[in-house]
Amino acid sequence: MLDLDVMIDEETIQKRIGEMAEEIDKCYHGESIIAICVLRGAIYFTVDLTKKMKTPIETDFIRVSSYVGTESTGNIIMKLDISENIENRDVLIIEDIIDTGYTLKYLRDYLLTKNPKSLRIAVLADKEERRKVEVPIDFVGFKIPDKFIVGYGFDYDNSYRNLPYIGSMKE
Ligand code: 5GP
Image 1 (tube, rainbow, N blue to C red):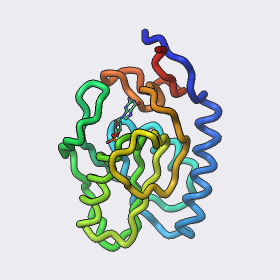
Image 2 (image 1 turned 90 degrees about the vertical axis):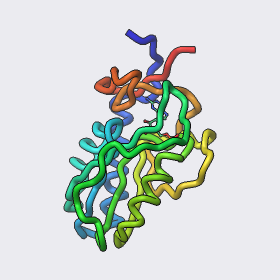
Image 3 (image 1 turned 90 degrees about the horizontal axis):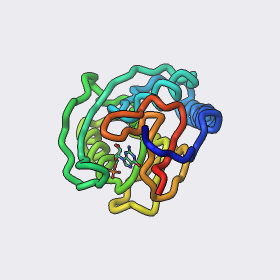
């Protein structure tokens, strides 16, 4: 078992996601959207967020990979593409975290080539001080310090995603 400090507890995560759901609902005025969950990390966030939203949602998935160990390389590989036609649709990317920004920049640029009506991004966590490329983020759950986090979708070698809280590795 990893030695973790609790950074954000379950209750705080769920409360903030409830607030985000309201913010996002307000933005779409009841129009239907396509929510694209970025696998695998964002599955927990996507489930909890979309359950709390009132906006009609079609769900799709995309998977890219960029990581070797715990350091981002900026080399993004598409592992699973979306299935839906997003042309002229309101699209919301749901991602677990923005760190350097390379992943979301790649995803945004790629999805924009499919001519959605609008493209917005929701992230649960933002490690602002690590940013290498700018990406406009519409909805942010928590600004967090530059620490490697685990739990609530965040993995350590694909384990620990199912912890209900976000922990950081003890230093
Ligand atoms: P970026 O391309 O913005 O540098 O990184 C985004 C991806 O890096 C996320 O989708 C996530 O998979 C991974 N990532 C960034 N920081 C962390 C972290 O602290 N913990 C975990 N488990 N993954 C992270």
